Length: 279
Image (tube, rainbow, N blue to C red; front, top):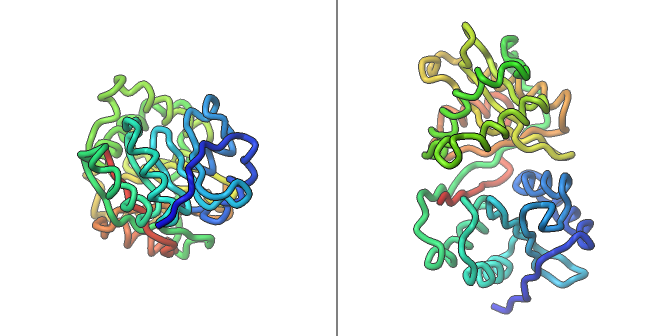
């Protein structure tokens, strides 16, 4: 299979990158948000964006920062990206994106970068542009700036449960707390409080002009099985559609059947599948 050289992209190719990201608004949402906020200059974006394709016909890109994210990566692009990356030390903490591209990259990089801590090969990618048919929970609201201390323990519990490591391990949680605080200040963190404790939480972790991507959905263990999640998610989706973006999207582990049922009741439909490799 013939491949073209991979090149690092700069600000002069920003419009081409944005046009490509518009072709995959859900799987490429995190990259689109970063490009919109910081551009393509590596020193400002704190990442590199690799491009594949002729200079006048950009076909695929690969974001290389804290995460490695291929976008619209064909088989030939995956091969070319892997050839480039296999000569470098791994600096990213995960590979995440469309399942075919991520698993193709990992198949070629595992000998150089392995082993992985976990590989999640099938994470349904879901989206909706309609208000949920179910009634929203009136007690779910945006978290106030004065409530970060109440939200943070729930955020740590969610992260540890989902990712398998504590966000407090690396720097005592300073970076993670900063991120949680930013989301609260931006009006992108939601919770339901009972007696001052968080029993449900979710964030709009990624926002672009095309979609608001929900992450960090969590129900306190003692509240699970009571049926609060559907109405709570309906409240998040309704506010996001009213206030933030024309669609709401998210991805979920295929084995998490209770969560998938909640999202289906809230009107989410499949728009693809992601995969994640965790280190």
